[in-house]
Image (cartoon, rainbow, N blue to C red; front, side, top):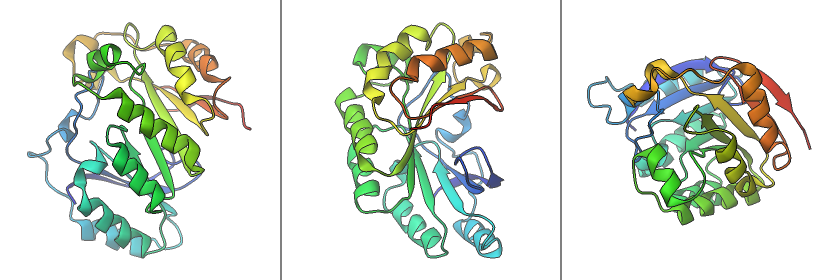
Length: 243
Protein backbone atom coordinates (compact mmCIF):
# COMPACT_ATOMS: atom_id res chain seq x y z
CA UNK A 1 0.00 0.00 0.00
CA UNK A 2 1.23 3.48 -0.86
CA UNK A 3 1.69 4.94 2.63
CA UNK A 4 3.09 8.47 2.59
CA UNK A 5 2.80 9.39 6.24
CA UNK A 6 2.72 7.63 9.60
CA UNK A 7 1.79 9.02 13.03
CA UNK A 8 2.71 6.54 15.74
CA UNK A 9 0.03 7.61 18.19
CA UNK A 10 -2.88 10.02 18.24
CA UNK A 11 -5.86 10.69 20.48
CA UNK A 12 -7.56 12.87 17.88
CA UNK A 13 -8.37 10.68 14.89
CA UNK A 14 -10.38 7.98 16.68
CA UNK A 15 -12.34 9.22 19.64
CA UNK A 16 -11.69 7.18 22.78
CA UNK A 17 -8.70 5.31 21.36
CA UNK A 18 -4.96 5.66 21.21
CA UNK A 19 -4.43 5.00 17.53
CA UNK A 20 -1.77 4.98 14.84
CA UNK A 21 -2.57 6.94 11.70
CA UNK A 22 -1.37 6.13 8.19
CA UNK A 23 -1.79 8.54 5.28
CA UNK A 24 -2.11 7.13 1.78
CA UNK A 25 -1.46 8.92 -1.49
CA UNK A 26 -4.00 9.67 -4.19
CA UNK A 27 -7.39 11.37 -4.16
CA UNK A 28 -10.19 11.74 -6.69
CA UNK A 29 -11.16 15.19 -5.35
CA UNK A 30 -9.36 18.54 -5.23
CA UNK A 31 -11.05 20.30 -2.32
CA UNK A 32 -10.24 23.99 -2.16
CA UNK A 33 -9.59 23.91 1.60
CA UNK A 34 -7.55 20.68 1.52
CA UNK A 35 -4.56 20.93 3.87
CA UNK A 36 -2.92 17.74 2.62
CA UNK A 37 -2.20 18.67 -0.99
CA UNK A 38 1.09 16.79 -0.80
CA UNK A 39 -0.92 13.55 -0.72
CA UNK A 40 -2.93 14.18 -3.88
CA UNK A 41 -0.30 12.55 -6.05
CA UNK A 42 2.42 11.64 -3.58
CA UNK A 43 5.07 10.94 -6.18
CA UNK A 44 7.65 13.21 -4.57
CA UNK A 45 7.17 11.84 -1.06
CA UNK A 46 9.06 8.82 0.21
CA UNK A 47 6.85 5.79 0.78
CA UNK A 48 6.67 4.39 4.29
CA UNK A 49 7.20 0.60 4.15
CA UNK A 50 4.16 -1.34 5.29
CA UNK A 51 6.39 -3.52 7.41
CA UNK A 52 7.52 -0.46 9.37
CA UNK A 53 3.94 0.15 10.46
CA UNK A 54 3.28 -3.51 11.24
CA UNK A 55 6.51 -3.81 13.21
CA UNK A 56 5.56 -0.81 15.31
CA UNK A 57 2.17 -2.37 16.06
CA UNK A 58 3.85 -5.59 17.12
CA UNK A 59 6.17 -3.73 19.49
CA UNK A 60 3.29 -1.70 20.92
CA UNK A 61 0.97 -4.67 21.41
CA UNK A 62 -1.50 -3.96 24.19
CA UNK A 63 -0.83 -0.23 24.06
CA UNK A 64 -2.08 0.88 20.64
CA UNK A 65 -5.73 -0.13 20.28
CA UNK A 66 -6.58 1.18 16.83
CA UNK A 67 -5.22 2.14 13.43
CA UNK A 68 -6.74 4.80 11.19
CA UNK A 69 -6.25 4.75 7.41
CA UNK A 70 -6.73 8.19 5.89
CA UNK A 71 -5.48 10.12 2.91
CA UNK A 72 -5.98 11.04 0.23
CA UNK A 73 -8.75 8.57 -0.43
CA UNK A 74 -7.95 5.10 0.99
CA UNK A 75 -10.44 3.17 -1.18
CA UNK A 76 -8.36 4.06 -4.26
CA UNK A 77 -5.75 1.62 -2.89
CA UNK A 78 -8.06 -1.26 -3.83
CA UNK A 79 -6.95 -4.76 -2.90
CA UNK A 80 -3.81 -3.36 -1.27
CA UNK A 81 -6.04 -1.70 1.33
CA UNK A 82 -7.75 -5.00 2.13
CA UNK A 83 -4.43 -6.84 2.35
CA UNK A 84 -3.11 -4.20 4.74
CA UNK A 85 -6.22 -4.35 6.92
CA UNK A 86 -5.88 -8.14 7.07
CA UNK A 87 -2.31 -7.81 8.33
CA UNK A 88 -3.26 -5.20 10.93
CA UNK A 89 -6.23 -7.20 12.17
CA UNK A 90 -4.03 -10.29 12.52
CA UNK A 91 -2.15 -8.33 15.20
CA UNK A 92 -5.32 -7.77 17.19
CA UNK A 93 -5.65 -4.10 16.21
CA UNK A 94 -8.97 -2.60 15.14
CA UNK A 95 -9.15 -0.46 11.99
CA UNK A 96 -10.97 2.72 11.03
CA UNK A 97 -11.05 3.98 7.43
CA UNK A 98 -11.67 7.62 6.54
CA UNK A 99 -13.30 8.18 3.15
CA UNK A 100 -14.91 10.89 1.04
CA UNK A 101 -17.82 8.55 0.23
CA UNK A 102 -17.56 8.86 -3.56
CA UNK A 103 -17.16 5.10 -3.94
CA UNK A 104 -20.23 3.61 -2.22
CA UNK A 105 -19.51 0.07 -3.38
CA UNK A 106 -16.30 0.18 -1.39
CA UNK A 107 -18.06 1.68 1.62
CA UNK A 108 -20.58 -1.16 1.44
CA UNK A 109 -17.85 -3.77 1.11
CA UNK A 110 -15.77 -2.47 4.00
CA UNK A 111 -18.81 -2.47 6.26
CA UNK A 112 -20.71 -5.46 4.93
CA UNK A 113 -17.74 -7.82 4.88
CA UNK A 114 -16.65 -6.59 8.34
CA UNK A 115 -13.21 -5.41 7.27
CA UNK A 116 -13.34 -2.46 9.64
CA UNK A 117 -14.58 -1.58 13.10
CA UNK A 118 -15.28 2.10 12.44
CA UNK A 119 -15.63 4.49 9.51
CA UNK A 120 -15.41 8.24 9.06
CA UNK A 121 -16.80 10.10 6.05
CA UNK A 122 -15.99 13.66 5.03
CA UNK A 123 -19.07 15.51 3.87
CA UNK A 124 -17.91 18.47 1.81
CA UNK A 125 -21.04 20.48 0.97
CA UNK A 126 -24.82 20.18 0.51
CA UNK A 127 -25.58 17.17 -1.63
CA UNK A 128 -26.30 18.74 -4.97
CA UNK A 129 -23.95 18.71 -7.94
CA UNK A 130 -23.97 22.47 -8.32
CA UNK A 131 -22.87 22.93 -4.70
CA UNK A 132 -20.41 20.06 -4.41
CA UNK A 133 -18.22 20.85 -7.41
CA UNK A 134 -17.28 24.41 -6.35
CA UNK A 135 -15.88 22.96 -3.13
CA UNK A 136 -14.31 19.75 -4.41
CA UNK A 137 -13.14 20.83 -7.86
CA UNK A 138 -14.57 17.68 -9.43
CA UNK A 139 -17.89 16.47 -10.77
CA UNK A 140 -19.35 14.14 -8.14
CA UNK A 141 -22.35 11.83 -8.35
CA UNK A 142 -24.32 12.98 -5.32
CA UNK A 143 -26.46 9.83 -5.53
CA UNK A 144 -23.28 7.90 -4.69
CA UNK A 145 -22.65 10.18 -1.73
CA UNK A 146 -26.18 9.65 -0.45
CA UNK A 147 -25.72 5.89 -0.76
CA UNK A 148 -22.57 6.08 1.33
CA UNK A 149 -24.14 8.33 3.96
CA UNK A 150 -27.20 6.14 4.37
CA UNK A 151 -25.17 2.90 4.37
CA UNK A 152 -22.98 4.23 7.14
CA UNK A 153 -25.83 5.54 9.30
CA UNK A 154 -27.88 2.35 8.90
CA UNK A 155 -24.92 0.01 9.45
CA UNK A 156 -24.74 0.07 13.25
CA UNK A 157 -20.96 0.38 12.98
CA UNK A 158 -19.17 3.12 14.92
CA UNK A 159 -19.06 6.12 12.61
CA UNK A 160 -18.42 9.81 12.28
CA UNK A 161 -19.19 12.40 9.63
CA UNK A 162 -16.73 15.28 9.36
CA UNK A 163 -17.50 18.68 7.94
CA UNK A 164 -14.86 21.35 7.40
CA UNK A 165 -16.26 24.86 7.69
CA UNK A 166 -14.83 27.83 5.79
CA UNK A 167 -16.18 31.40 5.99
CA UNK A 168 -17.77 32.31 2.68
CA UNK A 169 -17.76 28.70 1.50
CA UNK A 170 -19.24 26.41 4.15
CA UNK A 171 -21.26 28.07 6.89
CA UNK A 172 -24.70 28.32 8.46
CA UNK A 173 -26.78 27.98 5.27
CA UNK A 174 -24.73 25.06 3.97
CA UNK A 175 -24.92 23.20 7.29
CA UNK A 176 -28.68 23.70 7.43
CA UNK A 177 -28.92 22.18 3.94
CA UNK A 178 -26.71 19.24 4.94
CA UNK A 179 -28.47 18.50 8.23
CA UNK A 180 -31.37 16.38 6.88
CA UNK A 181 -28.92 13.99 5.22
CA UNK A 182 -27.33 13.30 8.63
CA UNK A 183 -30.49 12.35 10.49
CA UNK A 184 -29.63 9.54 12.90
CA UNK A 185 -25.85 9.85 12.60
CA UNK A 186 -23.84 8.54 15.53
CA UNK A 187 -21.41 11.46 15.57
CA UNK A 188 -20.83 14.60 13.51
CA UNK A 189 -17.63 16.61 13.87
CA UNK A 190 -17.20 20.17 12.67
CA UNK A 191 -13.64 21.27 12.09
CA UNK A 192 -12.14 24.64 11.25
CA UNK A 193 -10.10 24.85 8.08
CA UNK A 194 -6.39 25.68 8.16
CA UNK A 195 -5.83 28.67 5.88
CA UNK A 196 -2.05 28.46 5.75
CA UNK A 197 -2.16 25.03 4.12
CA UNK A 198 -5.16 25.39 1.79
CA UNK A 199 -4.87 23.98 -1.71
CA UNK A 200 -6.60 27.09 -3.05
CA UNK A 201 -4.33 30.12 -2.48
CA UNK A 202 -7.38 32.40 -2.41
CA UNK A 203 -8.43 30.85 0.91
CA UNK A 204 -5.08 31.38 2.63
CA UNK A 205 -6.01 34.91 3.60
CA UNK A 206 -9.44 33.98 4.97
CA UNK A 207 -9.81 34.17 8.75
CA UNK A 208 -11.24 30.93 10.23
CA UNK A 209 -14.33 31.02 12.40
CA UNK A 210 -13.87 32.07 16.00
CA UNK A 211 -14.54 29.43 18.71
CA UNK A 212 -17.89 31.01 19.59
CA UNK A 213 -18.93 30.95 15.94
CA UNK A 214 -17.93 27.30 15.66
CA UNK A 215 -20.12 26.45 18.63
CA UNK A 216 -23.06 28.27 17.04
CA UNK A 217 -22.57 26.32 13.82
CA UNK A 218 -22.54 23.09 15.76
CA UNK A 219 -25.97 23.83 17.21
CA UNK A 220 -27.43 23.59 13.72
CA UNK A 221 -26.64 19.87 13.69
CA UNK A 222 -27.65 19.08 17.28
CA UNK A 223 -31.20 17.99 16.34
CA UNK A 224 -30.10 15.38 13.79
CA UNK A 225 -27.04 13.65 15.30
CA UNK A 226 -26.67 11.75 18.54
CA UNK A 227 -23.43 13.58 19.25
CA UNK A 228 -21.91 16.75 17.82
CA UNK A 229 -18.24 17.55 18.33
CA UNK A 230 -17.05 21.04 17.49
CA UNK A 231 -13.33 21.30 16.87
CA UNK A 232 -11.13 24.31 16.33
CA UNK A 233 -7.82 24.15 14.53
CA UNK A 234 -6.13 22.05 17.17
CA UNK A 235 -8.53 21.09 19.97
CA UNK A 236 -12.10 20.20 20.72
CA UNK A 237 -14.15 23.25 21.62
CA UNK A 238 -17.41 21.64 22.66
CA UNK A 239 -19.17 18.31 22.86
CA UNK A 240 -22.93 18.10 23.01
CA UNK A 241 -25.66 15.56 22.96
CA UNK A 242 -25.30 11.84 23.65
CA UNK A 243 -28.19 9.59 22.84
